[in-house]
Each structure stands twice: as C-alpha cells, then as structure tokens.
Amino acid sequence: MKNNAGLGGIYGLAFIGALVYYLQHATTFWGVILGLFKAVFWPAMIMYRVLQLLKM
Image (tube, rainbow, N blue to C red; front, side, top):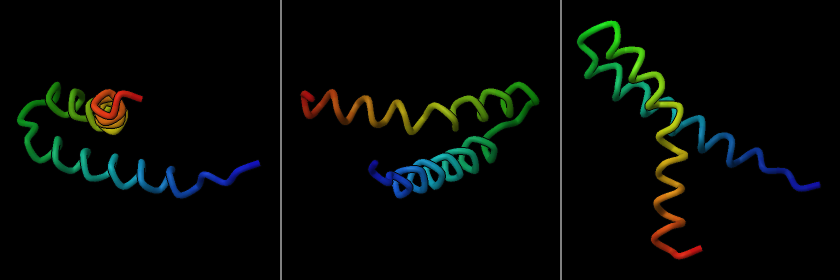
C-alpha cells in the first residue's frame, strides 16, 4: 500500500489559497457560497488541464 499523504497536503494548501483568494473578492453572500465551491473544485480543474496539456 502506497502512502500518498503528501498529495493531500498539496491539495489542502491549494484549497486554502483558493479559498482566501475567492473570499477576499466576494462582495455578497452568494459570492461567498460560489467562492467556497470554486475553492473545492479549483485544484481538480487545474490538474485536469495540466494532464490534458501533457496528453496523458
């Protein structure tokens, strides 16, 4: 069994960074809610695009 704990840490840092960024720019309640969703899915979208560019 492999230990992939390092990847969870990278995802966590990316999530926190995205959350701070999106919440700083939110001006309404719905902007905050949208920022939470964006922060959750942002790292996954970046990895999808990187793998797509690398043709993997």
